[in-house]
Amino acid sequence: MRRKLFGTDGVRGVANNEPMTVETAMALGQAVAYNFRNHAGKHKIVIGKDTRLSGYMFETALAAGICSMGGDVLLVGPLPTPGIAFLTHSMRADAGVVISASHNPYQDNGFKFFGRDGFKLPDQLEGKIEMLMMGDQLKEVRPPSPQIGRAHRIDDATGRYIVYLKNTFPAHLSLEGLRIVIDCANGAAYRIAPLVFQELGADVITLGVSPSGLNINEKCGSLFPEIVSAKVKEVGADLGISLDGDADRVIVVDHKGNVVDGDRIMAICAEEMSRRKKLKKNTVVATVMSNIGLEFFLRERKIRIVRANVGDRYVVEAMRAGGYNFGGEQSGHLVFLDHATTGDGVLAALQVLAVMVESGKKIADLGSKMEKFPQVLVNLKLKHRVPLENMPRFQKAITEFEKKLGRRGRILVRYSGTEPVLRIMVEGEDGKETEHIVNALAEKARAEIK
Image 1: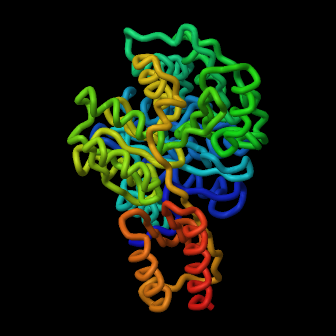
Image 2: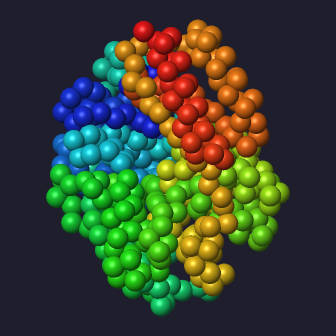
């Protein structure tokens, strides 16, 4: 079935507006609890959240729905999305739910789901959950009163996750002598991230660690790396780490204040993993949005690149299907499958720091090896979608410009998965030419979409 409620990464919207209502949350809780019932009859589901004000009501509504279907709930409070994935698997829960809208402002919220293996649910299973919510089946299978579930709070969830993260950092290395600025976006990692780096020996300066419920991602975090950049230069830090609201992505800043995005982080880590024979099949999974400069960097080192659709969920699916162990997105979702089942900003930062400490080189030197090509993106807001195959003049223009760019450039055209927007992205060696091409294509598209 075509999913209506679930988008690219779970369910998302403005809190207290459809579909992000307590009624939807309770129905989701019931459907998920029923779907993940195990053979023994009892089942448990982990619920975590970020720091949004609306998280309180959604946490309660989800728990009520799960308990009403006989499921037990494990409440862990504010914890990064990857932390819920870890706990779901390590506690042998049947499923995990994260209440978060990631990098969006506080008004938004969302639900992300993990299976008992710690991986995000496939499209087919999300479709099945929607069908359960829309039908009458759940009304007929509610358990009798003695079998209603219970809710328990897991008080040591934070400590468990911190220990897990520290264990992903090589035991023979230390962060002693390093000064690190960390921006936690007033989000889910506001307690965890500073402790992880401090306990590994770093001198940590914190930003975005005073959540109010209304200030998550507000001019801070990975969408505003200039904040941590300014602080790095002010205090003379060796590195800056900028997380988003649910800490599943990271942007790094070098000691000069320059941004090191997900593509450069992939370049740094892939080269090191390949050198150590730790990169499975010598392959990296990136998305269609990753800069072509990453492709050239990897090719020069005889490392293969596989491109997946946008979304860390699709990166992980491609990794599992191909038997690869490293991939990510330009936006800062980095997935190290040897350690985690989903993108983890703190874990990724630790892997970058490990390369830095082991090599004795600064991030500025490691990241500069990759030449980044000019990349221009235009988003066209539309009243309605027109299939690309029904736009012949636009398609012809794409073909002509692709021939002009040759192998030293790239054109990507796709519709957004969550809103009526056509995205046109062009990469090439010449910035002015790249901008000219993207504007010309935008004009062609507007002419055919009326």
